[in-house]
Length: 40
View 1 (cartoon, rainbow, N blue to C red):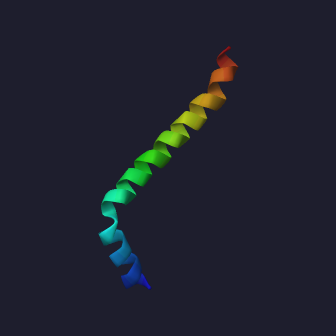
View 2 (cartoon, rainbow, N blue to C red; view 1 turned 180 degrees about the horizontal axis):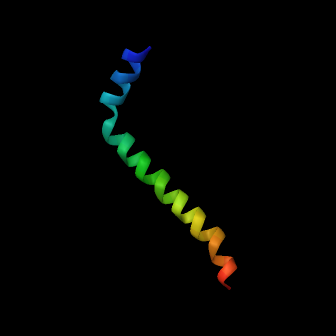
């Protein structure tokens, strides 16, 4: 099981980085979207 996970991570390292960046940007957008109405 651990070997399979390691193989998947090794094969898809580029997409994992892109997915992590996308998830982080979505979290930032959510935070700003929820915070912005409090300023107005």
